[in-house]
Each structure stands twice: as C-alpha cells, then as structure tokens.
Image (cartoon, rainbow, N blue to C red; front, side, top):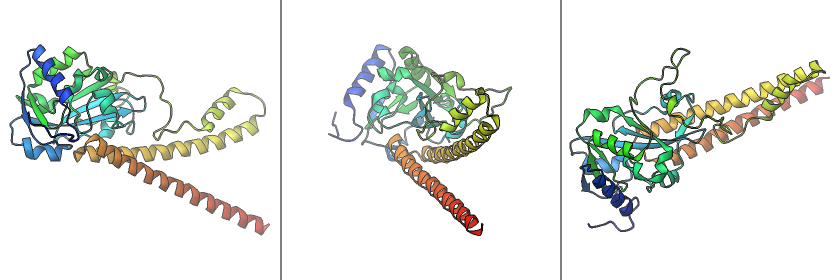
Length: 306
C-alpha cells in the first residue's frame, strides 16, 4: 500500500493488528484508503458517498477518572451535560479526556479514535457507549486505528468484536433527555466503574478548608456562639466558592458539548476547552478582585465617618 509517510494519525501497526484480530474471529470487513483525516469534516468528502453509517468519536472522562468512548453517528447531537447527568455525575461531571489518553487507553494517535480500538489492552478500562442508531444500518464505518483508511463492518460484527475483547459496552440513545428523580435513577450510572469519592473539584482544586472546618465544628462542643459564627462565615464562603466552580464547570461542559456537535476531534476540543477554562478563571478572579476592592473601599469610608 502507498503510505503517507509521517502523516499525523497514520498507524500501520495498529491497523495490521486489527486486521489480524478480525480474521481470527472470522469477521468480514472491507477497508478503503483515503488521505489522513483528523476530523469528521476532513473525512466525509472522501467517504461520505459510501452507503452506511459514518461515525464521530469522543473520548470522555469524569471526576473519578473513568473513561468513556462515545461513538455516535455524525449527525447525532451529543449533549455532554445530559450524558453526564445520565451517568450520575450531575450536569458538569463529564468532559473531554486529555488527548494523551488516546494513546494510553485506545492505543491510537490523535485523530484516530474508534470503537475498533477495543483490541488495545488499555481499552479494557474504557466503557464504550455506542449510538443505538447504528443498528438501523447494514454497515458502519470506522477508522481501523489509523486515520488514512475507513473500515466497513456490520453492527452485529462490531458487537461480536467488542464482546470477544471483554470491553464493557452499551447501545445508547445518545439524544435521550436526562430524566433523573427519586423514582428514576440515572440510567447509565451502572457503567461508572469507580465509586470512590473523587478528589478535587471541576477545575482540579480541592475542597475548601471551610468544608473540613465546618465538619469539625459540628462535632465539637463549648464556645458554641463563637464557633457557630465562624462556621457560618466559613460555610458561606465555601458555598460561594463551590457555587462559582459549579457555574464555571457547567459553562465549560456546554462549550465542550458544542465542540462535540461541531465534530471537532478530541485534541481540538480539549484545546478549545482549555482556552475557555483559562478565560473563565480569569473572569472569576477579576470578579473576586472587584468585590474585594469594593468591600475595602466601603470599610475605609465607614472608618472615616466614625
């Protein structure tokens, strides 16, 4: 085969391993060559005319560092906030994984995310969430661990491969609304592997000292009035900080959701999210600074009037 030497996303070794595994399972698949394509927009001009379902793939992570590979039809709208809620993380608990995880977890370079990566050892720790609309098509098209080719495989054979590799998976209605209540628990929560309480907040910051202080004060006795006042002050401060972090995280998840709908690959989406996070943090810090200055000015004015 003619190769695009050094092209980003070209992975001959991964493709060869996949072809060998499919042959061992007697799974029939056909593959077409095309120029390397890092995004869906780059890919479709080359293969969009081929009958069948074409895909976009998102590698996601949550605050507990679980990994989810979401494989959806190119026109499916993946709402990360709704998906996060359905996994039991609230609206802002899921975001794009670090692009480096493509190699660690899926064994592929950037621009090559694919459900066919289940043959990679690291994928045993990934939960595969597959758009159930793929089942409406006779064949589905995915990168064969390299982005300069596209492999056609039936939904049934895809399922055979995933089961043979022992990877946790589910066919999911990715456009379903998140309906969670006392009588309706998160429908995808059973796929969350790590249940230990996550460390750090939405932006990698730990809980505020006020949280621990409030808990200790709740247990203690004596000097109740003084401690109660301190606890109320700390709880108010900690609550405000957590509320702000939650708001920022929700906006960031919305940005990532828009990036996913636009068909950006994991690396481009992560870069966009990082830039958005930096700006949001700058706005938050600016708001806190303005509030501090205003409060200081008011205090000085009050002292001068005495």
